[in-house]
Image (cartoon, rainbow over all chains, first blue to last red; front, side, top):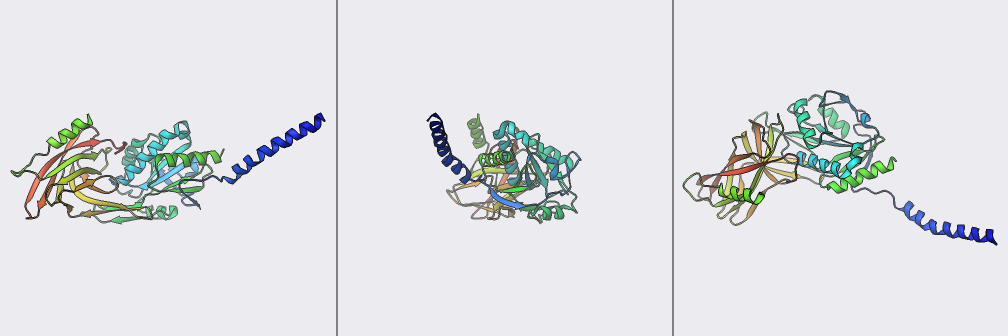
Length: 200
Length: 147
């Protein structure tokens, strides 16, 4: 009788647990940003503003946020980088597991020195990356990022139209999300936490 | 403090010529730059009593200033174009603000340092094609700050 009661209790507990497990299983991890499965830019060699040769594999174990732009950009680029500085603050200690990269689409004007002044102005951990002007079209193709140089009133005053989405790579180094420029810092922080959680 | 500066900004819009300005400029600011950076944006709110056009901007900070229109399309691509003039319809508020219109300052002669102030000269043209200039005192706001 005693054993029977114990079994009944166990069965009851198991039954109680079951629906909860089912709910958990049904709620697949969802992201605010658009999910993508691609290998854009993985393995592509660049140089950081400190002169070190880099590929995305250097940041395995971290979530990597990649934004493309240029320092002549008066509005969209600083707004995006400011947003990521807010994301880092929201993440607190988890920010150590995040690397923000600013890849220039205008290396002719964005010297390593300027990139080195610019990216860390938003957060000391942010890195500016570049390839030579000759290899920049190849870099943009590798990352599937759109950009187009628009002539200005003088040859050195051109502007660069470009994609303002941000790529998020998970700690395993896979491209997972395309974050729109309209995403709020809270939404980006949520998505970053989710990517970190998945990797355990 | 901010209100005080706004008040100062309002005070600092005297006519350069003899005419009384028909336009009120508030909340004028320039985004700070880092050393070596060659361009930045200036923003402000304009309200005109009569139909005017903003046809030119000058800044002691920059070799050139252009009026730019920025848009982000449905594919999340940012496109920026210089426009030759900006209509300021009578009685309406025109905002030059992040995400839309701005004054592009090009060929910076010096770093735009946060906390300092600078002057922007606006050249306005009325319906009779008479031009007037007004000087706007703008605050330089940090690069890494909400705007």
